[in-house]
Image 1 (tube, rainbow, N blue to C red):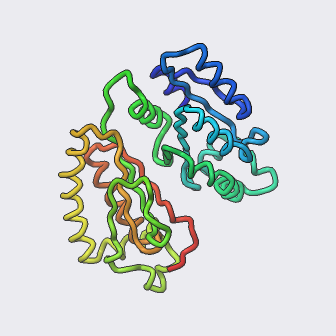
Image 2: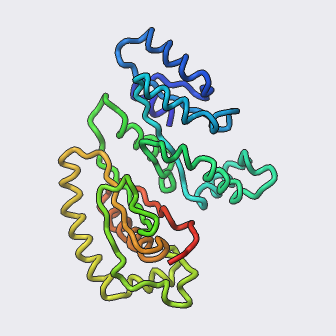
Length: 272
């Protein structure tokens, strides 16, 4: 990501310690009066980062610095696969399994994630696609690229995603949770997908939904919108919203839309 920002004109610094950030920005402010854009990658494992970042960022905000925090994440299965492919040890996995380390990492970074101005789920991106996304969203040197779509399934009981531009409520569809064999499964399992998609209500709904997005999304793009988040919710975020968001993603992919798909509440305990 840092290389992509460097390509579009940012002054980039890797692994700057948090305690040096205020003095670094002051130095840059004195030497550059032209609104120079700076991109920093900071290692949260640096001693004191997780304890002090909120205080430091708040002070810099009061001093008038425009800080834009980008938070990269991916689902657990993708991260496990990446660690397996790179053969690198997770920093927290010395005494734990990788899934346990990933869950601990998510918990420790939850506060930082809430402060983020932009959250990018990289699950469905390869490195080239992620690079192009960063360039498209943050370049002032060339016109914006094709609009990026972000599909998010969620549970209404946990609240509507604050980043959502459009929200679809699919709680009217038959709920697999009330089918004994399907309740323990999720929308990523074939039996649940078949149950939801075989319902007459679902087939009719998807027919209308596909026509709706096929009409609406090009209008957003013509208006110049660089990204759009469409959130799809059901009660528990485990079954119907997952299936519908996956089906919608497959439909939009056929139209050559660049998109990401994430399931915000899929990993949470099922309580309906």
